[in-house]
Amino acid sequence: MSNQPPQGTWFKSSRSSNANECVEVYQDETRVGVRDSKNPGGPELWFPGVVWDAFLESGIWKA
Image 1 (cartoon, rainbow, N blue to C red):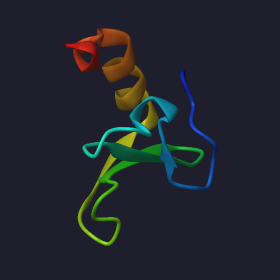
Image 2: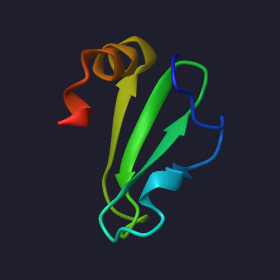
Image 3: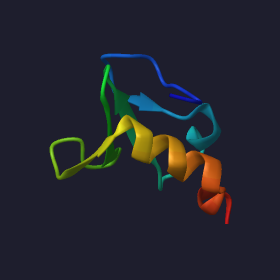
């Protein structure tokens, strides 16, 4: 997977350290999880690694 966060732990981007609205990402061998960093016990979204790669390559997240 491209732009990989550390495996096996929730990771918050260093770019969001000063913002109150950010997400955390979790990666293992086959999937990527996303959650709200303000609510770590709340819902999580999980994607197959290939879907996450397609999302990153699309550039949509830069908008």
